[in-house]
Length: 159
Length: 145
Image (cartoon, rainbow over all chains, first blue to last red):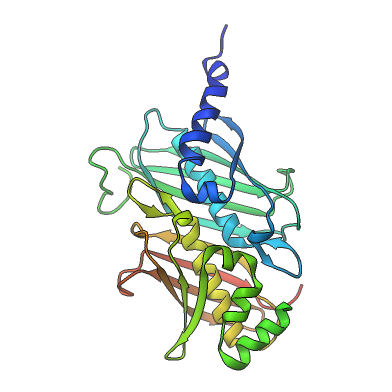
């Protein structure tokens, strides 16, 4: 019995790297890298870089680039949860910094798109240094999914 | 320059140049702040690498979050009582409309400025402050743990 997802996994990863990470200038500027993908899940890594540091005395990355990493990973998890390519936009994103990030270490974000309705997708995510059980930040976000003419519904709420 | 000295410079002169230069990430992002009529106004200068959707085109949502978090911190440094840099407890960003590939500005309001925790609301806008592209609610820890 063949698993259609498994046989396509390398191709999906190439598409994510080329069209999502590679085609988005800011994702490329941060050198985001696809770490893992399975249906409804995406993991991206933000490599450590001196020019992304938020406090030069501690060497820890700035919260802003972690926000960009989490936003990008959550959006990618939504895109890969949809049956057909759709334009999406972040409605809101909440990030809780549960413990300080460590200096000189890359940050990995794992995002899970746990529910998609006709117009809205719901995502949970965690950012960590490699151990999912010990997150730096936890996050939840909602995304609007554009269906027809690319316009956002007036109230942005799913029906 | 040490962070403490850069923070002291903000306190004494209201000039954010030194702190912006001291933080590698704000240099990378082109994020600055200045006092305009006594109000701390954050600014993110447009650069091609800030784009999130080249087709629309629109700025990356994460960059708006970065500008708003930085503006809140700059305002807390200006109004704060110690040289400790506030720590972000959490931030919620609401995206209201696409941000065009141009400069973005931000203005912060303290909902409550306690001794330990500050609750801050931030508005990011482009040409019209009354039509924000994004708003954020954030909590900051003001004391060392």
